Amino acid sequence: MLTSLLERAPGARGAVFCAFDGEHVELVIRDPALSEYDMKVFGAQMAAAWLNLETHATEHGAGSIVEMRLGCAGGTLLCRALPEGYYVVLLVAPGPPSGQAAFELQHAAREIASEL
Image (tube, rainbow, N blue to C red; front, side):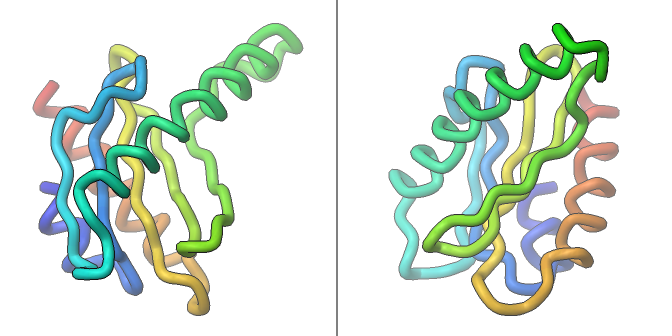
């Protein structure tokens, strides 16, 4: 499913599926300039931001977080919630808008969720 996501999402560089604690479960890389270690770090780094945002949103009545988007030197990190605290992160290259990639991530998250 991650491979299919990378094929469909414009500018996709890599994707990582993570557990609630930031530990990677599966990853796929499309950009040869990235290493597995890079994608594992992106996934783990998102856990801290995600948990912080989730805590504050819940405490202030906004409810659970569904999606998060962060800019970084490597492009845009798109993160989508999955059941049981899992999440999936898609790294999109800098430059082109990431809207279509976010749509594809949403679609992939539904597919992954149905398999959990």
